[in-house]
Length: 158
Image 1 (spheres, one colour):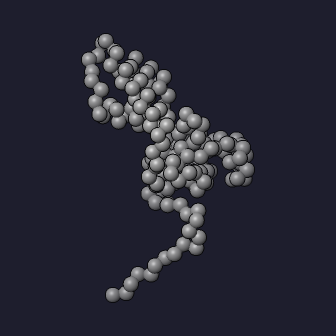
Image 2 (cartoon, rainbow, N blue to C red; image 1 turned 30 degrees about the vertical axis):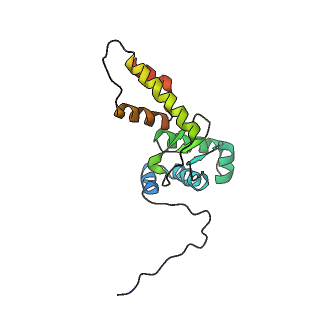
């Protein structure tokens, strides 16, 4: 039995894991938005999947106009591939980020406040008797991670 050849990276630094997440994105995005997505993946913080995305700078890096970058960013946002965080960073959604994220303690506290507001809003409706289950908490946490503004959740419940 012949041993399979071992492959080695030419450069270990800067390497990015491109697997099912990239494959899913390429099927959803236009060419321009996919190019932006790959650039964001290569430059985002590995532990959080976040990057300060300033359209003018992105345009310079990709040799595109600011308007072209804005259009591609909108596509990434509309298709749920990225979300704007409350701190102004662009975050690549879990489904499209191949690395495990390092929990951010400040983010956890912010998420807990968000979940408690959703719980309070849901439970104070006098027309509905409800309990706030673990599934509800998980869903509220996902709303927070997706960047859904709390006012939108409150309006939906009311």
